[in-house]
Amino acid sequence: MPKSPANTARSKRAGSQLTPDAIIDASLRIAARGSEDAFTVRRLGEELGADPTAIYRHFRDKDELLLSVADRTLGEVLDSIPEGLDWKGRIRALADGSLAVALKYPVVGSAMASRTTRRPNEFRVVELILGAVMEAGLEGAEAALHYRMVADSLLAYVGQQAAYFLFDAEARAADESAWTREYRLVDPRALPNITRLSAELAEVTDEQIFEATVGALISAIEKRAETLRGPKRPR
Amino acid sequence: MPKSPANTARSKRAGSQLTPDAIIDASLRIAARGSEDAFTVRRLGEELGADPTAIYRHFRDKDELLLSVADRTLGEVLDSIPEGLDWKGRIRALADGSLAVALKYPVVGSAMASRTTRRPNEFRVVELILGAVMEAGLEGAEAALHYRMVADSLLAYVGQQAAYFLFDAEARAADESAWTREYRLVDPRALPNITRLSAELAEVTDEQIFEATVGALISAIEKRAETLRGPKRPR
DNA sequence: ACGATCAGCGCAATACCGTTGACAACAGCA
DNA sequence: TGCTGTTGTCAACGGTATTGCGCTGATCGT
Image 1 (tube, each protein chain N blue to C red):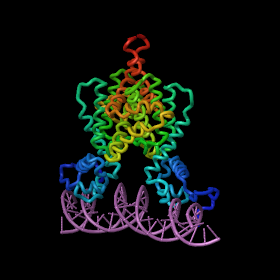
Image 2: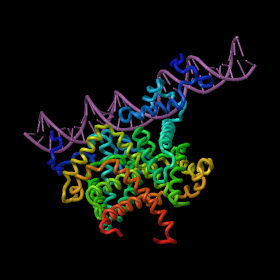
Image 3: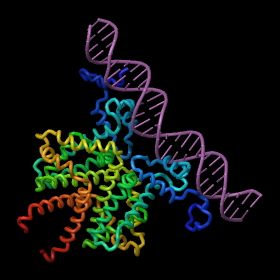
């Protein structure tokens, strides 16, 4: 019963066509097709040219596969972050990279928004954010709290964007035109602010919103660090 | 054979036992049971004492039902916000109320995080947030942008919390103990920050994180309003 | 007052989905 | 050579949302 003793000496005769990595690759190919192609076990089998259920020889269930896929994409994000940035730059790079990869593989981004993979690359992300908030000047419980703020907010936001992106283009277009249209048709007496700002509301872009959100998180860290540093020498 | 003798009174034109409101009520009862009871069409039929497919006489599909349910809960949130609060108070009340109701009906909260209902109560929320950011001193495109920042961030965060809450208690407990356990077992050379802060990381509470996040959003609005107001009279 | 209409409901069936158990082929080892 | 365990295939199960058909009973027109 060589169930899973660590030795295994993988060199010898990996008699299988299917490897975890190959399955993850195929999953990413499907995920990259977004809403045009559902990410199902059967579809995955097709992509691999194998029986769908063969996947269960390598992953306990679809959830475990998804976690592995998510960890791979997390690695993509981390590797895209250049060296030598200051703490704000690292957080911005992490945010931008996360959003980009979540929109590239929307199914993964949306499914993992409320999960924790507990795999290697997740720890690297934690380490990165913690390092950033500590460089900003926070310590101990304050650093831990602000790490969670950044991580949770970012993950939630990015996951939500991915889920929204997963709507097929048709439904999304209807959704957005409805916004601009219905905002103008609203009762001006009951909803004066919407009426007044209907034009501006229609013109806000996702990029602006994301930038503002990330900026808010960074400012919060900065401000907290200043407050904690300041009391001896009030400015 | 009329299904159940109960209704009768229903004067005219309401020969049906099932009404949209009754279905929404039943949906909320199921949703309130969280992860103990899946929110499926079949279960809903059971709850109503009717055939599951009868629901389709009142809602086009499950999605439309969910949107209606979500709008009802949005109303709950809005009605819980007291009069006479300043803009910060109103945003905090909206945030707290949204989180509370999303945790009360986690299935609804998680499913609607990336959707827009385009129903009456959603407009009321938009109006409320817009009013708040304008009272804070923002106008036009700036007001629209910061409304979206607050709305999107809040919805995403709250939805993510609801989704996480939906994990059954067993899995969640394993998840959390794993956090505290694995953070201590991590390689201290590769991940020094995690190692150093493992104790503090385990002690951060959800309430602290939510408070910090909402505070960051409010601060961002305040700061932006100051910047825009300030240029003539730099402090 | 009576018959026609028709909305609301139950029932059976459809098309998916993830997952499992039994079986066959095949590699490595004794 | 035969044993054993891994890996892929196949068929099937129980779950999901949804749809088409037929019945029934209340409503309405006459």
